[in-house]
Every structure is written in structure tokens, then in C-alpha cells.
Length: 443
Ligand SMILES: [Zn+2]
Image 1 (cartoon, rainbow, N blue to C red):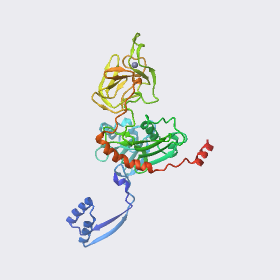
Image 2 (cartoon, helix red, strand yellow; image 1 turned 90 degrees about the horizontal axis):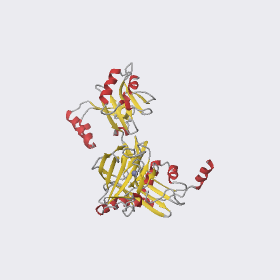
Image 3 (cartoon, rainbow, N blue to C red; image 1 turned 60 degrees about the vertical axis):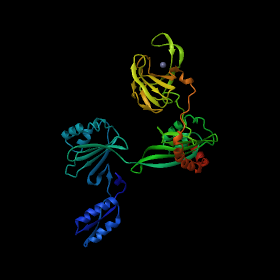
Image 4 (tube, protein in one colour; image 1 turned 45 degrees about the vertical axis):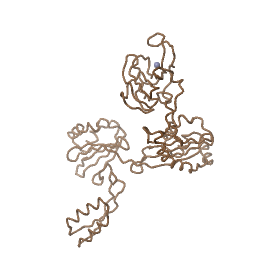
């Protein structure tokens, strides 16, 4: 894979005419040890050395294969096109295709090739060119190789992903996402920031003069193809003249964001078991209500969040799965134990996604909205337990998430300080007024 980044332009072949066997084994060692001194010695030991310069085409290695050795045919899967049709178009016999289908089952189901995805066919140079290797790319990073040379060999691999750090800063005139968009920053950075600052900053109420400074990673394959964001490592967000820092620290049980003093930026509990914007509250907690299915008055000890079947249900806090089961009234449900005081419960799932004993992180998907058990429509009934009793989750004064552990404090400071220094040094350019006017003129 590494070779991919260093194409050979020309190759100097040193033909050693009187080659001593020992010098061969020496030079092999030299390749491993990178000690150039010895390799010079080897050459001088040989009396007749002829040097021939041979120009070759740049080696094009992709998918770990030297493409120069083949006729390369790149395309994308067309509407309705099957795996078999693609190979047949390059003269692979039907019997072989059946064999591939059978043999690749464990690695990749060939029925899962999708329209619009890239594939590469490497053909030999026979009079009727036949595909010897097919590479299918379900996304930018993963690929599956169907190697038909000799016996059929199917394997999956990944392109090497390189991480590049990027630093951006700017003032906000309209919205956070607009400000980032102007600098060609992936929209996912803006989404991530609203998660990190969900409890500290209201991004719908930003003020004039608010600014941001962000240090984050971008991922690339082949050095040039952008494939997404990596970690957001450090942020300073100034809101109403007050700076809010966020530093990623990965030394704890989970990676978390802390401010410069080591205080966790999040609360221990999310406000809802579904992502913002995916639900409406259809019934609140009450000591007494008319049950729509049982047709009698009884207490409703939870909050109902209505959402389409299949909407992911997320854990409102870190914890351990204490129950993942089915009962007649709860349907599929999951209960999480957060600590000795708090547990939460999620009812009526169409499908559970976790097992008893599993450790769960806040925001992790634990199941999907459904209407199993006593339910008239798809929703999740969210129940909040405090000291073994069900209470109204919406009325609880929720605890802060844990700050940096004392034992990790020094390590955190070591990680955080250089980032903070860099953020503090960074100058935020005042918003370019001319550019702003131009933009307005275009509108
Ligand atoms: Zn309910």
C-alpha cells in the first residue's frame, strides 16, 4: 500500500556480472536495515560492474496490485447490472462466476453490489481480453478483490487513510454552519460542535462578534481524496464575550470533551432518548391517566416520544444494560443501570440492539422505535428510575457528568495545554465586509 505514494519515475539497474552469493544475501539484509554504507562495500567488492539506465513508466499501484501489468477498465455499476454481467462483459465464463459467487459468500455477497459504486476490472492482453481481477468498492475506503488468477481468491481490504490536521477560525455573522461552510468545512464539524456544546451554548441564539477556533482532523485516501472528518481535538467558542473551551481527552473510559479546568462539557443525561428533531412528545408522565389500550385509568410512569418505526433509540446516559427482554405489556424493552441511584428504561421497541451486561455510552443506539407490547402507535415510553422508584424524568434536576478523574488530571493537563496555547495564539480575522456585501448583492 505504501508504495502507492511513491511512484518510481526511473529505475537504475545495476547489473552485477560477477555476483558473489554472499553479497546477495548481504544486500538483502541491507534493504531491511537501511544501512547504505554496507551496500557500497558490496558494489566495490565486485570488479565488473555495468550500470544500465532503464526508463519505466511510473508504477501505478492501486489495491496493492501493479495496474501497469493489465488493461485497466474502470466503471461504476449501472442500474440493474449484476455482478455476473460485469464479469461476463470481460469474458469470464459463467461456470467461473458461479464458483466465485459460492466462494465469496463469507466475505461479500455479490448480490449486494449497488448501482453507482465503483469497480475496476484488470484484464490480460490476450486476443480476447479476459478479466483476471475484479475490485469492487462499496465506499471510498473499503474494497473487495476477486482475484481469478490461478484459483479464485476473494478478500476485502481498506485503502490507507491519512489524517491531516486542519485549523479554522472565524467570526459568525449569520449562523455557525454558514460561517464554517464559507471556509469549506465539512457540515459534520458544525453538527459535532452542536453536540459538544449542547449543554453550554444555544446555537440558535448566537450574538454579533461570536467567534470560533477549531483544531480538527480530516481524513484522506491517496493523499488527495477527502473522505470525512476525524477527531475534533480542541475548540474555543466565544459566545457573548465569554470563551468556552472544549478539549478532547481519550484517556478515560470513553473519549470525552472537557473545558480547560477538566470539567466535563456534558450533563450526565440527555433530555430525550431520541435525537433532537426526530420525535414529538405524545404523552407526559402522570400519576393518573386513561390508558388508551387497557381502557382504564392508571398512572403513566413515563414520557412517550412518538416517532416513526425504526427510528434509533439512544441511551440517555452512560451505563450498563441490566435488562433486554420482551414482556406482554412492555414489548421489547431495555433497561440501563447508570449508577447506584439512576436507571432508565425504554419500552415498545421494534428491535433491541444490546445485550444484558453490555457497557453503553451516552448517545449509543440501544434499539429502534416500534409498537410492541401495549401500544397504539410507534413510540418509545421512556422511564426514569431514581433509587428504585419511577419518577418524572423531565422534572429531574439532572447531575453533571463526571469531571476528569483525579488520577488522570496531570495527563489531561499535558494533553490540553499545548492545544490551548495554540488556540489562544490564533487570531480571528474580522469578517470580510466586502465579501459580505458581495454575497448580499448576489442574493
Ligand atoms: Zn408510555
